[in-house]
Length: 142
View 1 (cartoon, helix red, strand yellow):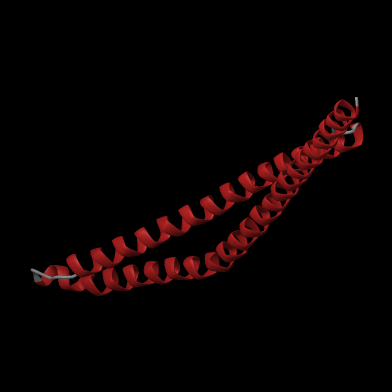
View 2 (tube, rainbow, N blue to C red):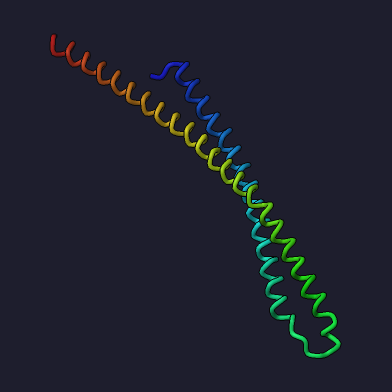
């Protein structure tokens, strides 16, 4: 049977594992938000590139005067989106690293809890086997 101190240690490890799980979930949400922003920016850039390739044809002389401004405007917008993507990449890398660290910490507490539970279980089995051996010896001696 596990002592009170051992049971308290196991409960504490379980609590720490849950706390780290909550931290991991929070970090995963933050990472997902950054990934979502990155995905939206990449989609916006693709949309702008598609617009510039499909809408940059001039069919009349009246439209030719506006084509240059349109292309410059789209290119400036693509440049702005590229800048945002490049600014977001380090944030994403930091968030992913923090998520990996949070997962590692959570896993550490889980492994500690599981190994401690297994050690207590093994100790209980050994005590039970020793008790049964003692009972067998006493029975054999009679």
